[in-house]
Image (cartoon, rainbow, N blue to C red; front, side, top):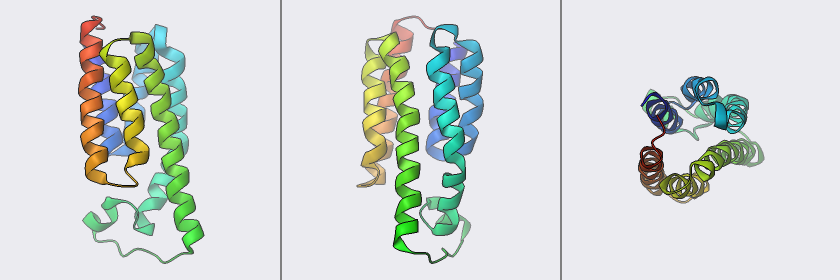
Length: 151
């Protein structure tokens, strides 16, 4: 049950409080010996992407800027898109390593990992689509974990 809770927490934090997702991912590295390497790589990539995530806030790319009432700073479109696309690429890479854990678990976890992996670049088109697919992928992944009795 602990692994399921840590995985759930990691993905939810990746959606809403991105930098904090490092903690449950790191705990999964310590907790889950068979999948240690993929979770370790996901944690490292996520950690590397945190400065870009933080840069998105003053640039007005993140919804946190609007929520916190931060007036976006004006920069060259090259910088704006560079930060945005670099962060998206790193986030996709982190989700790729999580998808690889789903492949090793099999069943619904594989499908859920793939849905979450596909969701990340699709947030360029629609945030609603991103969140819907990520939640669907998370539920499928958790069902796969439960199906394989990963506790």
